[in-house]
Amino acid sequence: MRKRKTSLPVLVLLLLLSAFTAWGAEGGSEDRRVWDMAGVLDEAEEARLEERIARSREELQLDMAVVTADDTEGRSGQDFADRFYEDAGLGWKDSSDGILFLLDMEHREMVLSTSGRAMRIFTDARLDAMLDRMYEGAAAGDYAASAEAFLDGAEDYARQGIPAGQYNYEEETGAISRYRSLRWYEVLLALAAAAFAAGTSCMSVRRQYAMEPDQRQVNALNLSYQASCGFAYDTRQDRLLNKSVASVILPRSRPSGSGPRRSGGASSRRSTVHRSSGGRRHGGRSRRF
View 1: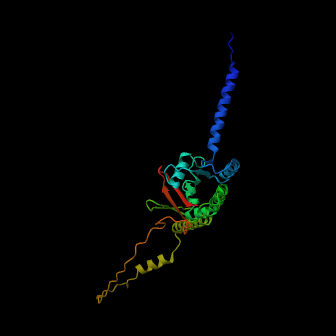
View 2 (view 1 turned 90 degrees about the vertical axis):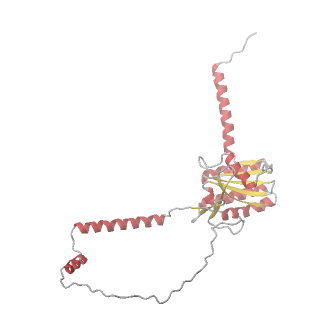
View 3 (view 1 turned 90 degrees about the horizontal axis):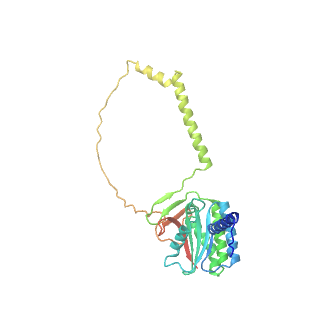
């Protein structure tokens, strides 16, 4: 009985094919941004969302994802969304910048989770406005339309960038972290002020070394030689006639953003942030449908 021999070039070709197949499968998994675990989207809707998210991520340099689930494993929708974002390794390139939309079918709740730079872009008011746009589709059972509305809002606000005066409010501690950026006119004003200060200092030094006469110095020198200079002292006594003290109780002001989270009336500049059960910071809002 004759044994078949496999030539070396054939073995190398098979190994290369296996490596490319594994790389392709892994790359497809990394590029995935729609997880329909609740089975509420058809293949065409899922493909359309994937294609749109891929374009938006490249244009805006911000990660986006859509997730549906019918079981949150005993956790709140917000924590499930936060942990899914972390466990899936989402974020733009090496950063954690991004936003995720969770359609929680178990609790019939729409949940938004933000991370990194997205926490500052998507303030509480902007997230509430996005939920307003997403509600109609979710309530009507058109979950693809709700996801499209999510992407509409995410793209619009990402293009607008971080609003002026934005600040993060730590839900657990009450700490506030303000976003500071310089506008072009502020940079020009600072440069003009620096140039003026430098020019004034240079002119002062130049005048001193040039020994240019200063009228104030001349007057002071003349006065020092006047023999008629003298000083007279007078004694006066002040008497306290009356004293009154007024006491006013000042109410303690509550820190901005304190109190329960609500869908309406959120500050247009505040982003309420919290820590997930995994220990990372996230922003987010939610609404039942």
